Length: 206
Image (cartoon, rainbow, N blue to C red):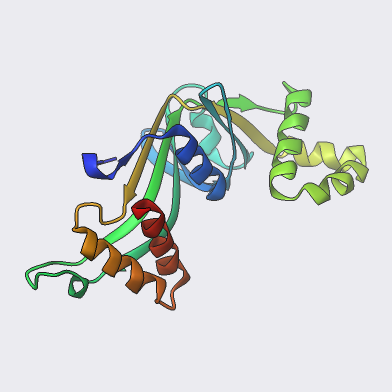
C-alpha cells in the first residue's frame, strides 16, 4: 500500500498487537486471474520474529484454490474517522480521513482433515482458544462423527508472513496544535470509531 514515510509503522510488536486486536481480516488472493476476497477471523502468532496467520474457509469457497501456489494479502483495519478541514488552523485546507491499516503478505499452505487430521484438530483448537476458550470443552464433548463432518467441510490454512506493512495515518503531517485539536474533537464525537481514532492519536502524541 502507499505509505508516505511520515505514516509508516514498522514496529513488529505494535503491528502484531494491532492485528490480534483487529483479527477479523480481509484475505485477498488471485483466483483464476481475478482478485478474490474473503472476510474471516484469523489467529495471529509471532515466534522469534516470524508472524503466522491461521484460519479456514468453507470448502465450497473457491478462494482456497489459490493457496499453495501464489502470494495472498491479509488486510487488518481498525477505527477510522473523517477529519474536517474546520479543525485546521488555515482556512485553505481540505478534508481527509485518519485510519490504521496493516497488510500481511504470504503464501497460505492448505490444511485438510483428509491429509492432516491432527493439524486440523490443532488449528480448530487454536481458533477456539482465541475466540471462545470456554466453548472448548463443549466442542470436544460433541460426537466424533459430528466434529469430523464439520472439519471435512472446511479448508484450513497456515500463512507465514513474508512482508508486513503498517500505516498509521493519524495527522502526523499536521502541527502539534492541530493534532491535539483533532484528537480532542474526535474524543468528543458520538461515533465510537471516531473516538477510537482520537485515542490512537493521543497515544501517538504521548
